[in-house]
Image (tube, rainbow, N blue to C red; front, side, top):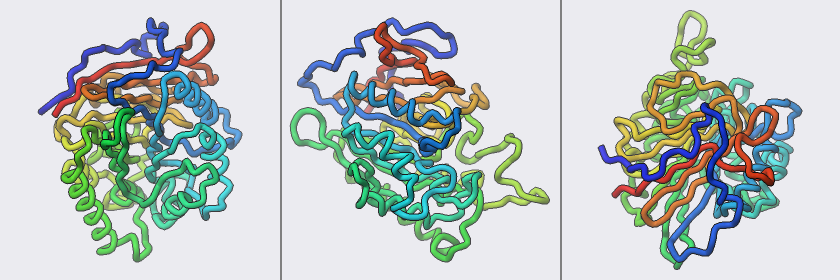
Length: 376
């Protein structure tokens, strides 16, 4: 199994406390002739200004703006659950303004968006049984007042140039994971039976073809559901085992959906993006994780960034080996791609909305940062 080698160890393991020894992130990065691309990875953001004191979406958004001013951002990715708790009902739904335009619309960068289970739901638990609701978020791309919302299809790719020249430097592969790993079955004809199987197969074929044809030096995959996680939802193939209550089990210990444990989704990932992309970004669990490359997924780095507006404790810290993991915090990852290396930094807030790390002017500093060399 190929791995990216670490050449800069973490600046800070958050669990140990303390402050970062690097303060040079408080000034804008110098002009560099080396090819670069910088972006934010954030997920599970869609609470809006709902009055819940534990939903810190706006505070996290303010930190995101500051980090982009300090370190530079070309775009951001949203890893699903963009509209809590049960999606939106039309492109004029006020939640679009509350949960997206208000916190992010004035940053001046595009946000490339994936769908999550709550985006395809009708209940508060995010059961994923109403996939037609996700289509509204695709349609919103055409009417977003800021123009920052980007979801041209439920699954899609997007190419990016770097800072130098016109060649493609990176390509994003955005998956639609909820129809493959929902809690409850969708009973509509379009999203069940043979129609659902056809949709999943068409998505797999699309991703395989696009990845095979891609000439981008850097390849990034984005989805809501992770391949591995140490949070409550856990690993694909074993989702939500050991949780109480178990959202997959109904009365009489009957499974509520054939796809609830995510076995099909695990196989889907292994046949499409695993060992073919450099980085896989997901959400679903409301913590921050950077996992070491996993058996079954080759060289692919695994980031779970689901703390954009909600948080939970790390459920099982030893389930998967991690470079970094942090629960009961709110935040995101800032990522920089260079010609031969990947730089990644986690930024986090305490429950009172103050940064874990800040410079002497109160500007946010990373709670964790590392550099990994690019592998073929």
